[in-house]
Image 1 (cartoon, rainbow, N blue to C red):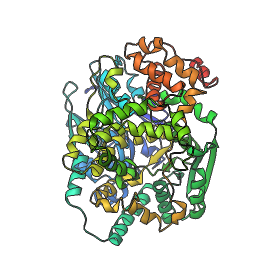
Image 2: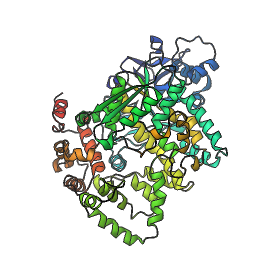
Image 3: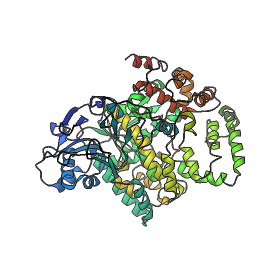
Image 4: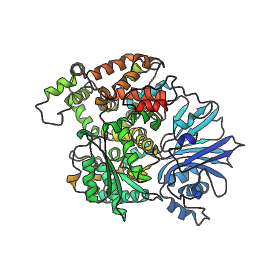
Length: 638
């Protein structure tokens, strides 16, 4: 099982057994703090009572170490401090004191209890469940698949949820009998046969609601000062490492803020990394270069070709392990691979959109509902069907005269907007904006889609306005299950540790005590965060339309990926596992390749799952050999 995770920890490995209890812990180490053998895991506490395997970093370990006393300490790793803190204060009290990202398993040899713990925001992954009669757990599913007796039956309900969101939402897993431990949770087991007891030591939903009930009443200047101080400390803590360190830089508000603060506390130029694409609509490299030049970082920029990106496609199943279809997974892996050539740790700007109101949907949802609500629903349904009948090309030609943001993508934008016309409420609009397949139950045979996100939306919307509801649901679901999953798997695939200072829980708690006007003001998103950034970078380098970190999947499916996709979406491939109804998938595929509609997102979901099904060893059939180029053929042969 540990060998399957060698990519997450290439520097060292170890195993601990408690044979009387029938328990084993195995670990692969990526050495970041205390590179000596004193940082080896599994690690025992000083008394020998506790054994731990721990993925992540506890950044305030030096402060905790001073509070715990003079030792004797064997080394200077955060793992050793964690063990002593837990032994003195107990698991939950200690974890509440930790500032960091972590997933760990702790065995109490005296009380004969097993604990699994995941960090507050879900930055680090942790799966658990049953394999035969055994209770198993790991950072990635590929380790659990190695356990003797693991059957790997697909959970059809989880598959339906995946098709809606392009990820399997927590706590579900693509395999029956396995789960993801929710962020901010602690699992305890008292015997191998008992059901695990799970409780939230940091209940994210309550953090959101209590913050909104106790809003800060301070001036703009005070709010800027307080957030600035919090972020400086968060960045400073995340720059503690015994290995080379750098940062991803896209040139947007979030990553530029992180890099600016890093440079402010660093005595030497920060190493920054950007990848560029030759396709203008997907390229942020020039913007990042301008920010890097202003901040005087040691900047590395690599322009990648479509071939470079396409060559990642055969590796997606291996990298992401569970079906995961956010297409920005490809450039995220490429920039991680670039950074790993120079550093072992890289800071990232993830979290800024969810905390400070950065997504367009936070502004548009209420506006859309106010426009369509007065229109009779029957007419809205008729109009939605009418727009859907017109191909994107015809719409594009109709907008040739218009020199606006619609130009060049009018058809796709109109189709996406028209799909919202029959919505029943603001919450319904938001749910549709998050949905790839409108009715996954029509696609996955024998499924009953769990209403995980819909439940969150309804529950929070009963207590908060739609803008705060969207930010809360995104923070508690979309962020850990999509954004943080994407960054963790892409970075750890090349043994790079990614740290996210905007998601320090103190920053999160502060952000939820801010009024909306501090986040979205007069059409400006992330207003408060921008005020901090403008202390370091002039607005002219930052103020531009938001650009997603993506790749042109839609055109690739009509071009270099077409042969590969056609093989995976053939009626035979779609029916032989008995999971899919091929008709709606084939219909979308036909419309896509004919240019009638752009179905890149729902089709990519199915394609990624189909490819994963084979490459993970879950399906019986052989991998599909086809485009792009000979890469897939080489992988299949190996």
